[in-house]
Length: 401
Image (cartoon, rainbow, N blue to C red; front, side, top):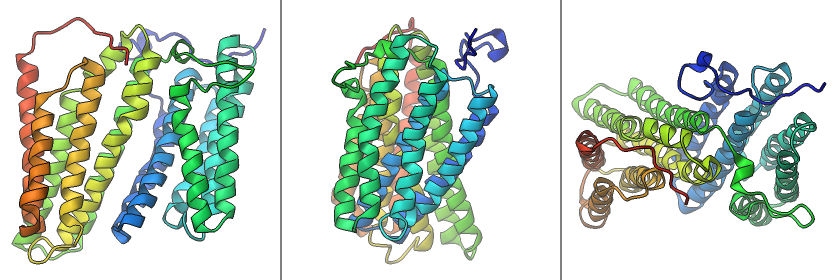
């Protein structure tokens, strides 16, 4: 009789939510990504240019991808088993190396980043194939296909790490494109066929909870940046106002996600007839837009606190309005995936932010732009909360995008 490393069906001990609770080892693993989010924010703060933004974007997509793939794996494998715990701790060690290398990934530490990334992505897939060697053929075939795709991208990651920067860009963009296209292509592999979303029959509630915790991690990092920067400043009226406005903006972001959609998303996922399809769209792809908005928001807070009045940092208005816009866009797309319709509050908020960027942002101080963006987030959150209170409860809906 073989040992199974897969999760058992949820029980009452899992909190009565109809899905497995997030385990302590999963939360411990996520701590490495607190560091990764901080590193990405500091990378942008130190190089808020077109080149720096492109570097941060590519690295953020890579960080999110390695985290979300691990979340898919621990949705199937039981982190309470010793072998899986050891896997998580080993991946955590590699994740620390990956996070530490982020600021110099396009200079002296490109190979270190590539090695850590490939070890986490490809190595975790090989471990999974070993862990499910006695399980169903469809599960083994699914990860054999994934292993082929990640093996091809691994060659490009390593080649980029060994190359000069221009070639590194080409290799890493190609590697990331392969990995991001893979799920939508069903990881089609000659001789092995194509995976379907039935092969990704994840436990929806657990996946939703994992992603909401990552959003919480990113928001926490934003608050940390605001607090640590403010602590080192003179506590005059302008700096206190800048800190208050930045913090209220973080509160509004929390409200927009956790009060209006997080629980309903988890409920919809738990009752979906095709949770793999919904998890791929709503959580694997769309959530990265939310995380990007929060990371840029931390950068915006740093710029606003540095020069709240007078001549602001050249990128302050772009960072402030861009972070709020990305976060609203991510919420809009997520709610569209969950509810199957566009929420008007977010559309209006995006229009207001776009108009502000085109018409008035250049003539305002960083504090004024921050107050405007925070006001849009607060009004959108209030509008959404009011609209939710007026809605008639509906049966769980399933949207197959």
